[in-house]
Image 1 (cartoon, rainbow, N blue to C red):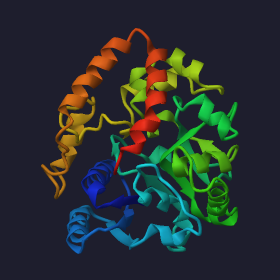
Image 2: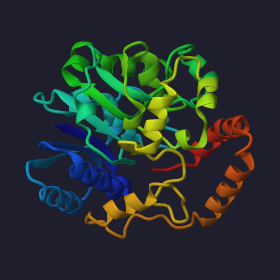
Image 3: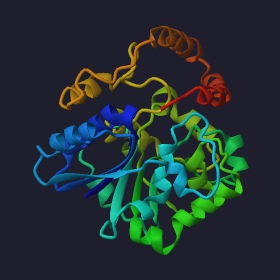
Image 4: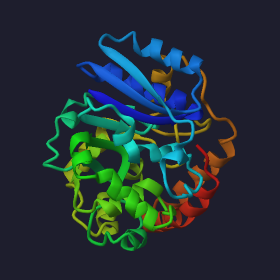
Length: 321
């Protein structure tokens, strides 16, 4: 099983947690590809030795000194680190012997066997992904996605030979370039808009986002202009998600968070060479107001969603990974 992460130094502890959790549940051999920016030789050695403790597991590093050198146009990632764009050029960065691969954001936690995900029939598509049901309808319409699902790019099942054959990467970059490298959700928007109708939907449990905790099934249906997965599927994923994706600001490594998976995250962190590291202080006041906001808006979920969608552009401008 080939697994790909794109990370910088700041996200290395979180990626180590994600990799460790995956190792605890995977049944077969694993080959990790870490597309890294600014990773020290010491960091790479620590991660390599850590993963080597699991039989039939290896890690390969692909150093990206300047991600901008791979693009023939300028771009603005609006507060996100440019390393996120590396997933658009996987065909250039990975060796020819990679067939199917699973791309995971570093801010994911694996909680179960992903064999079912890995064996998903993509039905000729280059990409499989899970929906993001609370994405703004207005922004979707601007991408030409009215009536179509919008997918989150934090977990991607990719058939790399098909990606190359269909020139998927070129299509995505062409769209991104045509929009001057300025899109609200960067490469995620470019993937969705350029590949509309070409992405295989995956079960919600493989990219579980906290939006499913905050909003009812009825509200999710109301916010989507396409058929959402069944209430039974979403409820099953809510009870026991296979892969959790920590979207938003309430991440388990930030001091003062109340994320319901924070204890699991902390347990896996203790298994890594970065035990006790990577926690971000200074969030206590923020989370105090966050809890007040959630308490106030609980009876008014549509108001909560409106506020989040309105404030998100402002928050992204100050967000750094």
